[in-house]
Image (tube, rainbow, N blue to C red):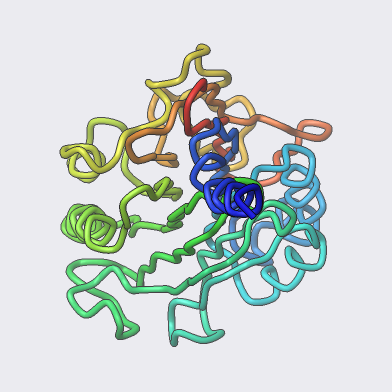
Length: 285
């Protein structure tokens, strides 16, 4: 019977051993531009399949989208069946207004918990805060790797585009929320359109402590693509000021980082470029 006891002990140790193995994963943030008829040739009906085909091709493990209206959400879900999605709409906490949905690959991760909170002093109550023009939200998921059982805490957000106070306070709130909510061993990933360029007060607040790091300067390989991420559908527009970012917690190695400029016949899938990061956690990354 001694051999049986040894076998049981070895089996019980497997999850801990698996969690120590290097695990490679990827993340994308993508403001897909809301569905508005006045965009004309750039309206959603002309861009839908370019957006979802881009995501399907690059196949990030986690994808955070912004400016997603209910109809767009249904179509994204239909076009990307490999992903499960979490999140509610910002106006009423159900299905009114824009979503900041968070998607993850069903084959690689199991959902353990999820939710949405408002960037506000009253995070459980829908509504605007500070000097924001619109209600702003963050959508989160606690995920477990099906391969290693490692836990991931992934958050997706969209900061206000007007309120300077709102952006700064939103950054502080997010850092505090992650500090309070994460567990020992969590791999933390924060995605979003922060409407805040590198070096701005909200950006600085996000990376001020030990909680979060910007993936762009940490990449082992040189950043690929333009640094700026907002184009207003102008394919020749180049800036050095990204407003869409991917941040990670400690223990995560950034292997590659890119601003993806995929286009078809000179037409862009959105007025923002998606940002992509190839990441690794564990030994031997």
